[in-house]
Length: 406
Image 1: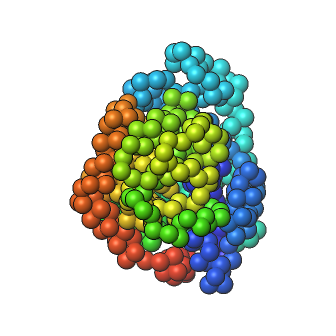
Image 2 (image 1 turned 120 degrees about the vertical axis):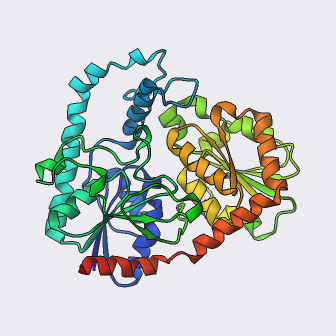
Image 3 (image 1 turned 90 degrees about the vertical axis):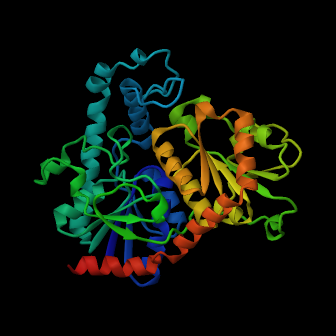
């Protein structure tokens, strides 16, 4: 069987697809990953074969445009304004972004690039003839290529955010280049998504209308060295604090709450391990006593040793914490992560704080509750057990094979 993946320009969007690629390859199937050139290195480092032909609007710009529109429509969840969608600078008012000038001078280039990206995916599909296509939610090139060549397409969700969220926070982009009608498929709608690969336990299941294909979540957070101290049980309860590399870039410097969170947690009777990139760790300066800093340590190595995790609500952090059975606190800044965090909190396996409410003393109290209330640990264990009982990636390979034969 030949399986074509299409992925976006943001690595965490397709990290959850990597184990499926491994399963396909280990069972003798062929996999090709169509990606933007910027992702060829990460895809190859994951052990998959990149085909760097995709283009289109980069994820950072796409998200900034979405956040700007949220602010215009009254859905932006923060007291500060979103960043200027194009130059990434702070805005004094929403009028600082000239929408008419953007549509006249900038958007046409994005539309041209997107059309070129769709054409590239269709071209490769016609030449390579995959039996099935798997794509992430933001890479609709795969869906179009599958429809044009008459093979099944499967959208791979990255976590507890679905295809049918409220319009202001939709994760599936529009067809800006009208490529679907250009290929005779009519205007793109979400109803054209037929199959969704869902790694989420039922308690946090996101809204979809397509056929839901369950899969066991297998964390992939990149590679890294395993420090020797991880082989020893912690002397005190360990709390993992993870920060996102994307927040400041997409939502502005006001989202960088790492220093105040770390100092708020330092007084707890717990070991605090901060997992972040080097630049963010450097901003912390000398850590308080009882705080350990680690640079780019894959979460799947660290979280099984932890009693709680604190993060900004991204799907990788959320799903890996669930996989490890760790109660978690999500401090959220955007609508997408807020939706996921609310589902998590409703399950009892975690707690949620919108960023405007996340004063240091409140964060400290929330984490103390995670550590001291056994209900959170019990519910987190239930989610972990449910993940373990879901079909493996090898099982999903069989599902894809059957789809390809229909």
